[in-house]
Length: 137
Image 1 (cartoon, helix red, strand yellow):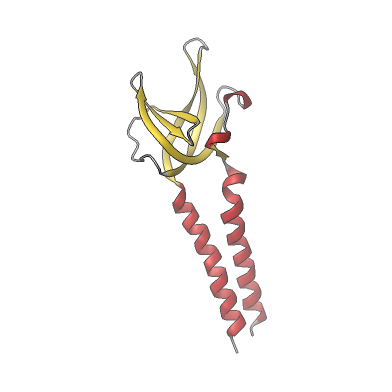
Image 2 (image 1 turned 45 degrees about the vertical axis):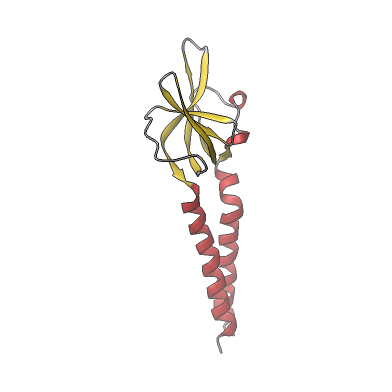
């Protein structure tokens, strides 16, 4: 048994599990938990969630996240579809003399699973390194 290699594997596993379980809740807001009352005009927030609907309203593409958060996509060229689990930055915007408040997408929506796969890979690497340390003679 190689205790240093085993210890390194356990540390990598713990880091991977921490990323899997805590990265999104610590760095972003779930779409269903984002409300207009908690933020001021101009605030930018990272959000994540599942696209439940994409529709057009007054010529603007609207992306609905988690069935509750509507985001205006001014580029109207999203490559995402309903059911995708995504993340992105939104800015709280006010228009029409302060009568219309909404969230506007800043940039493109990324697929959350790409980050998740990296995190799972780190956890798996920890298992492999730890196992190698445990069985080494």
